[in-house]
Amino acid sequence: MDAGNRTAEAVAVRDGRIQAVGRRSDIEALAGAGTRVVDLKGKTLIPGFVDAHSHFLATGTAEAFSVDLSSAPVGTVKNIDEIVARLKRKAEITPKGEWILGHGYDDTLVTEKRHPTRADLDRVSADHPIFVRHVSGHFAVANSKALELAQITRDTPNPQGGEFRRDAATGELNGVLEETPALAPVAARIPTPSREKNLEAIRKATDIYSAKGVTTAQDGALGNPRLLGMVQEAAAQGQLPIRLVLWPTAPVAKALIEGKAEFRSPDPQLLRIGATKLFDDGSIQGYTGYLSQPYHVHAPGKDHAYHGYPTMPREQLAALVLEQHKAGRQIAIHGNGDAAIDDILFAFSEAQKAFPRADARHIIVHAQTARDDQLDRMKALGVIPTFFVLHTYYWGDWHRDVFLGPQRAMRISPAESALKRGLRFTIHTDTPVVPMDPLRLMWSAANRISSSGKVIGASERISPTQALRAVTIDAAWQAFEENSRGSIEPGKLADFAILSASPLEEPARIKDIQVLETIVGGKTVFSR
Image (cartoon, rainbow, N blue to C red; front, side, top):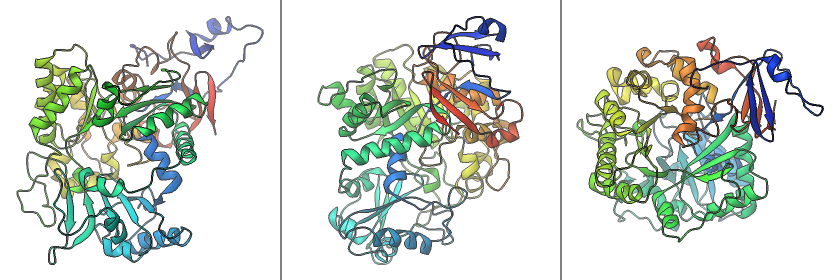
């Protein structure tokens, strides 16, 4: 994954870094008396995958402490009764009064084609507060006990950028919480995990990521400053075997800038602070993505002109961006809908006018419905889109038939259009929204096939080589790490993944390739 996309026969590693790359005979000549020589026997060595956007800590927490409510193709939940049954099993072994958490339910994939409600969760227990997150992370459902603890009643007004959903006939809360401002009051009541539980979550996340060849992970929205110390402790104690980049949310980033929060990495190559994370809209599959044109099939309870909404007014976003940009921070903003992308580009442009900065590498996370004119503006501003291209697999049919309609759906995650403009981009999994699997991510970018086997936008396919760049060297570049990782070149960190086959030869089979070994700094952290 160097500038010429060259393939070599051998690599020499010393003291955790790459010493030489080239022909086998030349590299073997460097071997000394204590050299360990590994013959891959035809398998493929690539740079370790660099995570362009996901949620490392949330992935570990979900795995360790939350009930999996996923439907196919990720899980097996078919209907709301099965969600209730899984949560009941958890309630039976949980002391009364303690929280029950769930994750991964998808209203588009259960038989009822709706969110579970407060009434559904009250069937599980009246003695436990219950909080279950939607697969997108942009919705959750709370039972009556949880709403009571959060002091949310039918008279509580909706927060800016969110909604406490209500029964259309009675006006009573139905338990569905729409977007972060509505989720936050309930989530704030969930007790902070103990040190031991946080360390367990870090171990779980490390196991998940390293098994998929990821050598640099990302926590894409760290909103609790207390977790900074926990991650630092794990790194200092040798309990963080893969590298991690933390994206603090705006309040945490502001606290760091003002010296009200502290972060001291034991090793900046292992653990460091990355971009400040902001949000400007929600989820298209939840009808909260902010579009310039209405949804293809209008949202339940909304009129035909409804096209989502922003998390905050454009001027407020611009002010937040200006504050972080002026402080020299890289900024990453979640934007799915093209109207949200308009606001984000406005904010970046205004910040650059006020305080010009070369090579700021600001990021639009997802950029799902980016138009051609917006890609042109990204190029002019030096903005990086990171595409959640796995939407073509997990929700492609829904985007085509329900959310966006055929024309817009075929353009989601427009990677090839970006490539034609010379606009450098990355691709990501957004785990735990979907499972961490960089090879399936590459497969999706190269094939754009939905879970039903239909092609979603053949013209936006990219080559396997370009897909591999997007999860290695280009992802490293997005994080200002291109000089230390992302390619197999002398002087860089010895971060590798060994694969059962080359991902560059047969695009249709990329998803079937196995990660056999993951190596960080020359040390094996996973072996199949």
